Amino acid sequence: MFKILEKEWLNVNTFKMVVDAPMVARSCEPGQFVIVRDTEDGERIPLTICDYDREKQTVTIVVQTIGGSTLEMSKKEAGEFLADFVGPLGHPSDLVTDDIEEVKKKKIVFVAGGLGTAPVYCQVKWLHEHGITADVIVGAKTKDIVILEDEMKAVGNLYITTDDGSYGRTGMVTKCLEDLVKNEGKVYDHCVCIGPMIMMKFLSQLTAELGIHTMVSMNPIMVDGTGMCGACRVSVDGETKFACVDGPEFDATKVDFNEAMRRLGLYKPEEMATYEKVKAQA
Figure 1 (cartoon, rainbow, N blue to C red):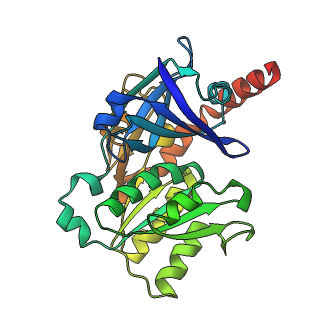
Figure 2 (cartoon, helix red, strand yellow; figure 1 turned 135 degrees about the vertical axis):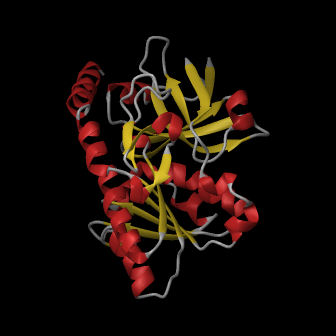
């Protein structure tokens, strides 16, 4: 059992938990994820790591209530327990594993959409702790669902953009990045993009045009998290990879986004059905 030490709602359907998880905190790195179950018979939920503290032996996760299992988890409060908290799983970000002196030479921009802000924060914080300041673009539909703004400002150069113009810049993340490069003189040679699949697809097309090497996290299509179910199959440079064991990050130019989005769509009806069922029982 893993004790929830802190819980905070970040917006109407997204919450943060700080969990007592000594073994995970001891060895996890930015880019990796954990498998969580709120009860012994609950669904296995893969969640990317938002933050960790090796001294306090804690790991922070950010969860969006998009299905029945995450809605059930949202009912847990500080002082209660999660049944399972397994990890770290997947590979760390290349920025963490590459030679740090080479990483320092890069001009890095992160692009985060929605819940993708959480794993982006983990990487940006790690870079900041190693003397590297990156630019960060965070996109959201509207002001009310922007998360981790203060935390991100403390570790990187933050640009917020909203689809409806209610906060920060107006427009999608692609417009923001294009403006920074073409109109404001920014130069980047490395990009990490984490967010909704459709956002990563179009952002990757833009960075290819701009000549910016881009890595994308394919965690949105993970189900089981150990390579057993095969649901997270993704075609990368014509080869079949599994997002959970081979990734979750891949070279954006080599990912077949259309195939990945079709596979992701297979689970939407069941996901919504279980969400409505749990909501009705509340």
